[in-house]
Length: 143
Image 1 (tube, rainbow, N blue to C red):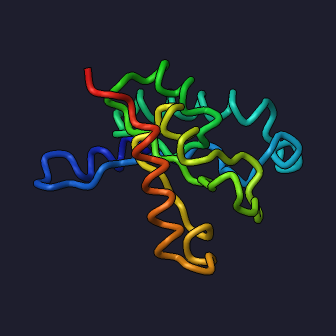
Image 2: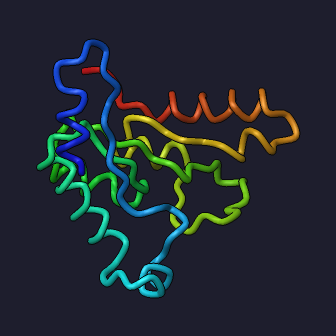
């Protein structure tokens, strides 16, 4: 399926990045077991990321908890999109494996997905600006 997706966009001008999904950030180890998936979220996510890399996808969507291992296994050009990103003060809601914006960046994320901590904030603009500042402060210094 992943190879078919890659082949479908091969040679297209301005093609979208193709991303595989690893393990949802709302799933922890007991939830995975309940749906018949053995192993930890980390081992499953890493295995799925390796399959995506082998199929020549551009990257994956994965928890910040797995981002560092995925980066090591799949290389610096492999995109990692991290959902479940929340400032330390935000509610977890239905998420099990979350990280702050700084933690996600430091783990190797290229892109962050931040939803409810902004959309449900009393002042969404301020929340977005605060998150943006945290991301900027977590960026590695240019050498």
